[in-house]
Image 1: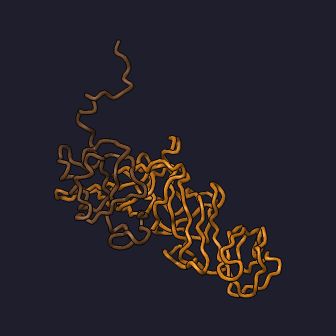
Image 2: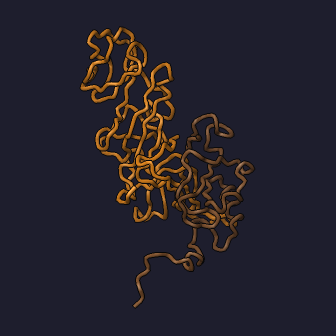
Image 3: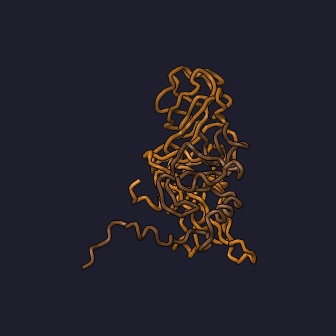
Length: 231
Length: 108
């Protein structure tokens, strides 16, 4: 589940409550988008794994609305509490695939020795690669091609050292994130050039800190509804 | 000619506040807070209303990491930049939520 991490600006957190569209359930940690004038929706609604145009923010609680009256004193429409700062940051777990909490898989279990520290077996072009075990644990580099790094690791790579990789990278418009189907975690090995989930920072960890299940991406809204407001 | 209004005078501030989402018009403050607590949604309270909310009894966590926040008070509906935010403990990692990072909200 994605967690609120703070704001880029350091400004105060702005919290609003928006009515949720009928037939929609928004869970905590999910992005919330404006439903107004979009397919005639009746309120805030959910985003998709790669698109969140006119994002209102991220939900910090859950809400469900129904189109029909409930027939009781209970309102059929509920509101979802949303942090609406355009520069809000969210920490999302890096999952190996589109399923939640899948441990990251090492680039190769059969890493060959590399005396110049430039060759990581099995890593993907344009990936961010970091050492998981071995002398280069915790060292982060970028790949320029399959199994080739842009800048060499600081130490020789020994046979059977292991490395992890992710295809998301900080910077708007480059390698932005694809969310999992739960919309609360990041599919670490899937990158999309045109998406609304920008990556602000990567929090990567090695084997001493459970890096396969304890590495995160810090996300921000690439297309926020209030993006023209001063944050 | 009347001068343009660029400042909300005290009289206007005392007028009936606008409708709040999901709140029945005229509903007492405490009754509405009870409704919010029932749905386990976040509670936003201004400094005047803050002391009236028993967070522990309601199983809410008082966030202090990002406090104060900006928003409308769930009780009196005033817009303030010194509000206190309360998160229901179901959105924290463990009961009480103080020992680990939160699931949605990271406790201090």
